[in-house]
Length: 334
Image 1 (cartoon, helix red, strand yellow):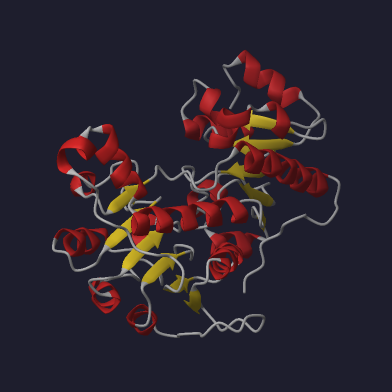
Image 2: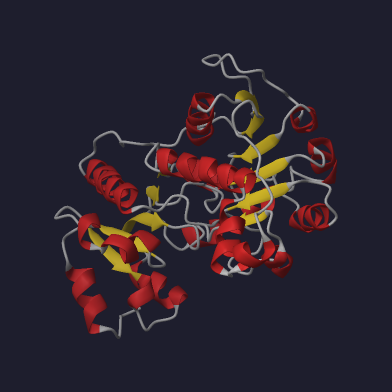
């Protein structure tokens, strides 16, 4: 089908290999598109086209060799069916749950992930959320700003971080960075993961309930899969107990959010620090009235520094692919 968009006609005639961008990546909005550009490939920005997506894809079906994926633009079997020439998916997201990995594998499509680009920043926020909940920083900040200190007296004391037993669910790149930081605070680390890690001496629990029962805080660092959806359910929350705190910087649906809300409102767990939610960007309104809950808008991965590093990795992967060189961060199934 011939394109009716003059800009698309120019793009189609360009000799550079084409990379489909279905939706604008948040990283483009943070530091601009220029750091992600290269003289070795050209982006086809579906989000700028007046054409419906299916028509846009039909126009470029045989010229698109790679896809730049974001968390909000799933790479599905249906999408790949429309793009038979694609041989690479590069993601800007920390997770891979938006990519149909089995279909990519079946079609011989390589996937490049973000490697450790986000790990330090996400770990920093995870620790920050935990400290905030324990020491009641955000809540006491509101107390002071609302003028309550002179009239209502001192704010209730928070709890010490040092010596806390912290369980990490998912000891990958991010989970390990969280563990290292909390060790420096004097915390006792244990973990649950798909398998025991030979490079750490932390106690390993195959069962998340057992981990929760032996911890003062749980930090969720694993990816979202069919196996981890609602992994943190009422049984796990019950095991964590009334003095337990939960922090989630993984994905919202890993926790059964309705159960977590109920446990928080009934005082069955002590608090929560949440960067991710089950139905983003809609957040359960019950959280808003709870001083023992600290919220952030799924921003753990984003700092200008991490996005700059991401741009170099994305460009490096795409340039390597179009130069028939090894990818810098190819995802390999464990």
